Each structure stands twice: as structure tokens, then as C-alpha cells.
Image 1 (cartoon, one colour):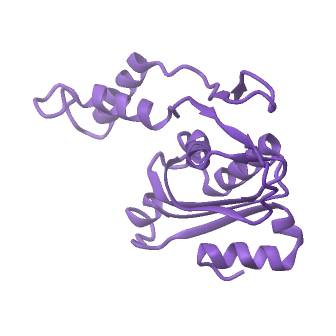
Image 2 (cartoon, rainbow, N blue to C red):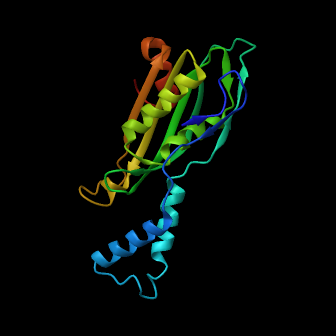
Image 3 (cartoon, one colour):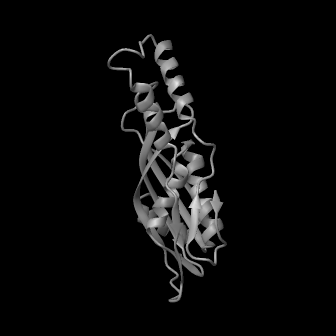
Length: 203
């Protein structure tokens, strides 16, 4: 991820640095897939499908740029800040099918506090990619630890995976829960318990 200034300069411009998506090549690949699946990509109903699918994947794999706004913690706030039920949509890198759910992201402030909407932006920064939920959870927590320098960070993601609900075991409605903790939220039993209690999970 590219950052245009260091932490003391506010705001920071956050850009996801990834390989550029080749839309024409993606469209050809979708047409080839339709043919391999026994369908005619030139038929009336499928003629525009390669373009639609390529554009859809490009959108799902491209996070929006944003300004990371932080403020001095002038009041010395030292309690947990938690944003609950942040929508999460990502793509399973094993089957290229969506998984979606919610993220609960919390931190114990250090010298700076974060604009609350930016917690959702950071989730999207890593979710708009081919992912596994375990890595996504850790990436969000690690990024906040490294760029905000808080006393503690906690991230919980609850999601339903279509690769599990639409195929294979077909366990529709089953949700996977992952967590990643740093600092006080990992090391202090009472802080850890408070975080999980506020997310609605039992530690």
C-alpha cells in the first residue's frame, strides 16, 4: 500500500498498489470459460456477459482511494473505540466466489485518534482482493497497528462464504469467525474480555 506522507502529516493519502487489471484479456477469458462450460458466448443472452463479468470483477478487486484522517488525542482518551458491523465483501481466492459479512474493528488510542469512517475504509482496502478470511483479518489489524500506533488493536470478521454455501457441503447460513489482536487487547485479559463482549462474542 502506498502512503504519500508520514504519520505526522494529516491527512494521509492511501492508495492500493496492485497490478493493473487487463479488461480485454479478462473478457476473453470469460468468453473462453463460457465455451468450456458448453455455452455459446455469442448467443443473445450471453453476448455481453464477458464484458459485464470482467467489469464486475474489476470493481470488486479495486478499493477506493481515501484520506487517512487522524487527530491528536488531546483529551487523553484511553478507552476502547469500536466500530461494529462494518460491511465486508471479498472474493475467496480458492473458488473466486464472494464471501460477505461484518467486521468489528476496535483500538485503544495512543497519541492520535482516527476518523471513524476510516476504519471501514481500511477494511475495504484489504477486502477488495482475492482473499482468505484469516489473512484479511490479520492484514486489517496489522495495518492499524503499524500506521496508527495505538495501545491495542482488535479485529473480528464474521462472514458467510458462498464457496461453502453454494457448493461442496452446501452449508447455507454457516458463518466463519476470525480474530486478530495486538497490544493491550491481546495481552490484558480484562481488555481482551471487554473487546469480545462489545463485539457480542465470548472470549
